[in-house]
Image (cartoon, rainbow, N blue to C red; front, top):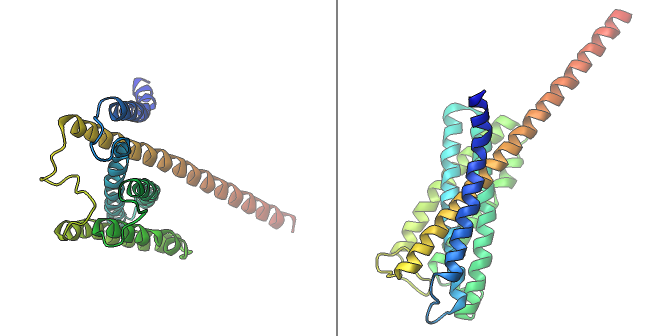
Length: 244
């Protein structure tokens, strides 16, 4: 009994930790971190945009790792988890593009700078992952669909860190390299950034786990309905045989 209670209470810890982390992160953002000298209040979007970008890319790699586990085990639950990881990453990626464009317009006077390798590489990654759902659901057979989706997740997930390495080796244009060793953030800004990064990571994990649970429940209900319908058909068939 105690174990069941513990299992029921435990899932609430992650959403609670997420809410507290987000509240702390953006309290620090607006009331602790100083205004940047050149950009002023606009720079506050840094504490949302950059953590979203980092978590998005990590989420895509996470989806690839889960896809590898599906290919290794054949367990459809790993395919579902991989699908959700990529789906949440896509949503976060759209938020990255929106917040980045707002920041770029206020800071550089342009919504996008096409000769900046960091921006272009992220856009290419997002366009690559935009093909995930069409390719996946173009295959009707569920097992083949899961295998091909896992191969895509692994391949695209491996492309993410490779593209980031290429960007780091490219000459810098206008986009700041936040995690560069040459970047000297004040302590207050650095602490706020780390807390914001943890908060966004927890938000990703909370949404991922919630969607996995919801989709798993839906699949179980569909399977139960299919079994019930099959049982009804078999019973009807037996009654027809008995009547004849």
